[in-house]
Length: 503
Image 1 (tube, one colour):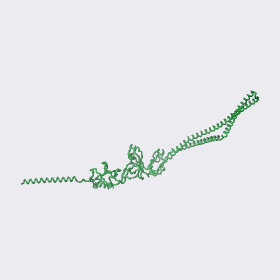
Image 2 (cartoon, rainbow, N blue to C red):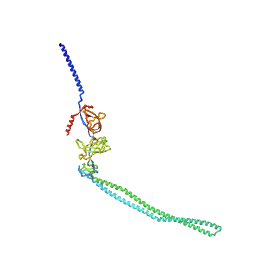
Image 3 (tube, one colour):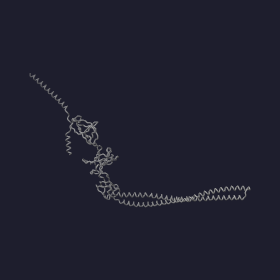
Image 4 (cartoon, helix red, strand yellow):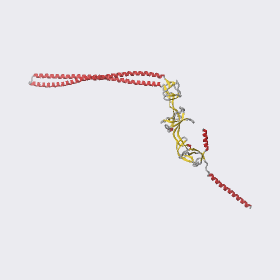
């Protein structure tokens, strides 16, 4: 009996243990299932509201402040500073005397040059008078020729008469020859008749007298022709001799004029050269007074009264404070991005400095050697640079010429567009995307198209709209689509605290 009770007790204990184990197993499995299927804990993230804003693509450079028309006037001659007529900071007007120089040697040279000019003038005046006299001589000789030609009408008439008389006498010779020939024929005939006894001898003798008379007439006519020829030749020779004489006088007078003109022309450049040299010396004396070339202000004076200066020595620096410029030396890479008239912000290098607006005024199209130090004082080495000039929209009246300033050139600008911090953009895939928080508080991917990118912000042209909440993904753990997220309160509090500290 006791044995049966003992066995029944052992059996009950076993069932109890097995029931406990079974209950615990089922409960553990249920608890494990609940643990595996529990909702994930939200990940703390920073949220950025998507807003409309302005974005810029800028280029930061260092430049040197200059005033418009800034220039350093230099000594035009070797001289002594007689008197400095202005002070640093003084306003000046164009043409105002700034510094007077002294050079007695130049005045002596100018006086000597005046004497040389007077001598050249006297010489030239003498040569001019000789030229006038030679021209008058030529005019007289030419007048004689004209008068002779005018008075040759009578002479020509006499020659013409002589020629007519000669022609008449030649006809008389011909007539006398005809008469002689006729008389000789008749004499021959009469001699023949006399020989036959047909006529008397006195008729033959009479005819012989006729022949002799005809020969005398012929000789007289021929002699007259010779006389006429000699007289005509004499008149022609006299006329030619006179013409040659007068022509020689004209030629001699022309030669005298040419020589006088040559002498005058040869000496004229000497006077011109002396006058030019005199004007140069005179200008050098005028250069002894250094005048202002612009309306502006005296920025610096490098000399004092009594200083000896050489030609090219820097005397003083001027500038126009109504216009302020910034001179830049751009690298060739940056220069390719810059265009005239681009907006510019200028500020003194340092924190919380006041900004001034301006525009790019000019940009060289030719790069220059960068062997010297750049505007920021850094050694440019052999890298070529491109000079550029920025003009302030309004004079600052506070920027110091020669000081270094920071220049922020606006390459591109967009206004009232969707902008987002660049840290929210994920570029690990082929197309950029951002994480956003959906209406259920979960992270979701959103593909975006980017536009203009600045230093800290980027334009989003599609994929986001104002009012969306962009997520700044944490380093760990990594986000996945559908991951619950919540905004980090500590971050907000910290930002608020930081903001209070800044205030």
